[in-house]
Image (tube, rainbow, N blue to C red; front, side, top):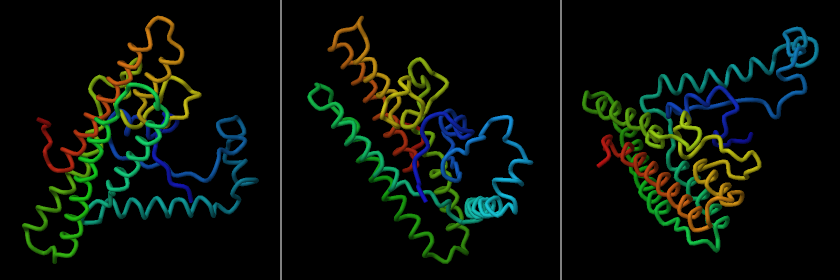
Length: 238
């Protein structure tokens, strides 16, 4: 099983995650099959060749069902933002290697991720405390509801009202499509686009392009700070 973050805009999750900031999941078996999205991609082909007894369909439906049950019935939504913070740190390390030798500072990103990691750890501890309680009194139920609201709203903190430059409909500054299809960066789409412009632009000097990249770094850092504020319950960012 391979678990990855959702990036790009290649599936139905894109409007939910990258425009609405709604936590999403995309499950599928391996790579795309040869007849995918062709005239042969039909029920007849499925029952004759791909999954005659529909065992695979049943299995994936059961997995989806279990996920839905946990999301709907668990007293606390099973979101893990600690792993999210760890992933953001890895992305920043990759970005640091890519920008080595430039004047661009990634300190805003590092600082924002530290804030987010701290908020994620606090939320994780809060989850443990609430799960260890008996959960039968009204106060515990209110605390669980408040925590669930914060867990749901955190993803929206990564959105920016102006969106990604030249693709303003996409609001998510951590995951989203980027302009250069050859780019190896599956994260920070605004930064990825600015880096691409640095390599191809003939109208702006290097200092101007590096300033544009630095601007996108600040935008991503502010988005991560907003997510940290939301996770702590400070919905209105100061």
